[in-house]
Image (cartoon, rainbow, N blue to C red; front, side):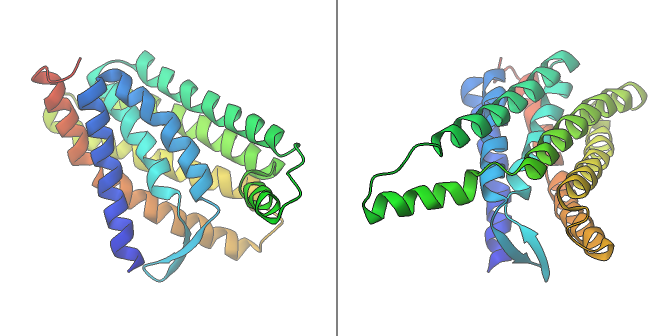
Length: 230
């Protein structure tokens, strides 16, 4: 059943991005970036089994941020895509700081307040290696994605080659993200064989998301050409 829910979440994420784009225009894409970053960092603490592999839940929504920057790169310009990256980074830093400040407050003495505080602490407690890994992987992989997209856009021009530049940029960027995050967060914690397994399984899932988002880049480009969005 997890696989069906995963596929459903995949489609819901992509549909919500197009809906935000249709309703709010370019601003809708900017809105989605902090949504994806924050939700991904909450979902990632939940381990699940997918297609026989151990995985974390936040892969889809995090990978969807690459779809957004690719749409911005295709329909607008490199500057707008970079702006989206910094919006996401700012939201990630803000969430980390504000939620960890919130944990400094003493809860009320009743069981419900204590239980709620413990639950929030389990999700948002400041774990330096995880936070540094998340920040570093996000910035480097997203920056690479935009750089690569525009590199391939110059070499493979035309609407028919959107699929090529989208996949060439995103799939490499997802690998960079998986490797950087895993090494910073877990090197020395797990054996090397386990680290390799984490990188490979995480990347395979992100690769599937990257491949599946290609039609949605075309749809977004069509919406822009038909002036359905600003």
